[in-house]
Length: 157
Figure (cartoon, rainbow, N blue to C red):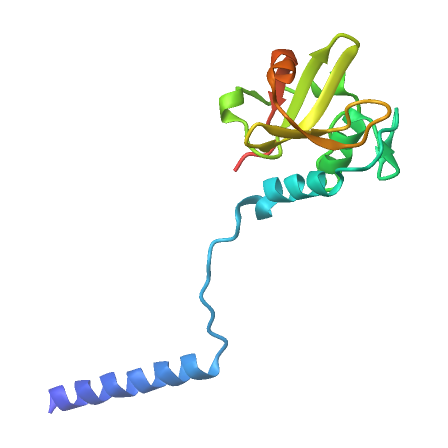
């Protein structure tokens, strides 16, 4: 008798659970993307800005200088960083190149001053290089690597 009651309760519980799942919004839960893909979003915005003209002191889509470009991209995602490349180079979150990831800030020391850009991976970075130019993708060749002073990583996964 007890086994028949137990069996009946088991079957009844199964039907109740089945109908609960059938008539409720049952979704598979998954872990959210880390920092909502912030690195990918920074990378994509930087790529989308390729071709915007260089403008000394520029920090919007009508024209950028190097540090204006970097600060614009970061501020689009609520990350306020210094406006000049020299001050960007003073940020404390430095890493070694072997640990660089897409979205990190590259700071260079050139003959005429400081320069910054955004690393997008695979030895490529995006920057606003100089007058008579546009924001562009560029290879981290010998010239740029020999002048690379800091890599700033503000996003930690």
